[in-house]
Length: 138
Picture 1 (spheres, helix red, strand yellow):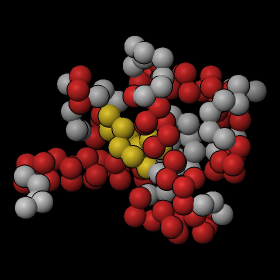
Picture 2 (tube, helix red, strand yellow):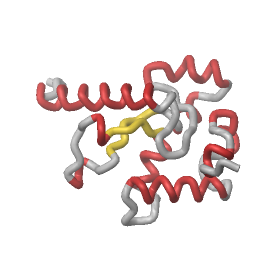
Picture 3 (tube, one colour):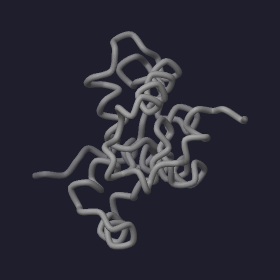
Picture 4 (cartoon, one colour):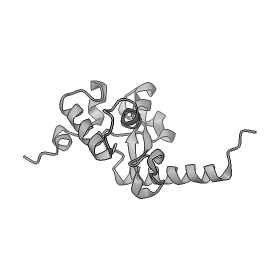
């Protein structure tokens, strides 16, 4: 059969729309690490424009990140969905210190970045400048 239930299709579409809105509002950058992200439908073009291979681009492609996870009662609303790269989204749920809410996770990502322990160097040209990452205004 292969077709999804209409309710799930609507829910997936709402998430996709909210992800796209967040992606545009965030200037195509990850909510957590600030890396420039490709949209899944435009990933090959992104590779050509930014001189990276497909495997690397998939690590930073745009995903919908629920600030409050659905498993914890978080809604699929625009206010609860941000655009995050696959790496940050995946690491938040599989590798970050336990018990961090989205604010704590964002701080942890910035700490990792300041120590050079986040995305590999091959993504440097897609990351915001260090001034933006640290939040300092010196």
